[in-house]
Length: 382
Image 1 (cartoon, rainbow, N blue to C red):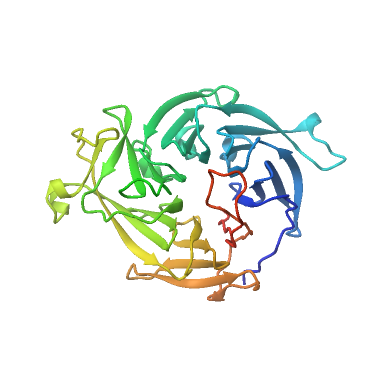
Image 2: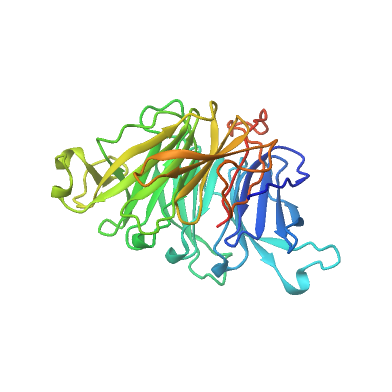
């Protein structure tokens, strides 16, 4: 049985994001009080705050961990238009008496002229790479050429999405080592078109190119969060999306050759130039479609998160509930569990191996300090 525990975070304002480290033994939280807190769990399953510090001069929207192969590294992004990389110091710099560790600012990214809304590290097999997205509609991808010196970063690519960006996700599949893929969500109500865009790195063009599928029905609802599912043996990829109305699960399937598709080439997905959407001659084509959509929350959905095998997805919304989704043997997705704030077990089915945390979010990132939402943030421990 999965039992939930609450943590008295002691933030002075809204908590916008939480993130587990790779092993699920550490937790980071960020808030509109401009601070980040790091929590460690002991053998008795009790969480203790081991570090708390001011990180930005505005609300901190997102926090994320790098893979432990690169050390204890965090990245944050903020309303103050910056993203920052932090590293934990060990040894003599750790305050043993107060049980507080020390996190040092290693690099600050100041390229954005608007609020930086999301920050994500690339899968470790790509190296120490960090991506950010902003309200200016630009995805920026940075690389640390020397992983032993994370004070030095260089910007590698800028992708103009032509719409304000709210969230970004890397495809974690090892099969994509030669063809990295990212997805970006938008909550821009002033621009027409799909609120979810896909990009793939094209080795021939040495640039990121947008994937265009004319058969893909646009996601017109404002998108708060997106997350690629880990791929363990599937022949296609899955993306979860949290929108203002529902939860969506999207499949991205590579079409190996033309006979695999019932549609003519002009109606299937192809890789195109990200600036003018013109084909570049790449024969990698995709079929993208929404395979499931659920409005069970009956309200705005704020976060989605996958388990480590990519078979179970959690979503959280303004109804104050975390809902679990799983596909059956016929690949039909259905609700398999609900966790509410006033309950400490999951119903109707018992799911094990999960951790949960609470979060109050707001959608108006253009204002520093907005009204509270009743959303619950849920993250799978990887």
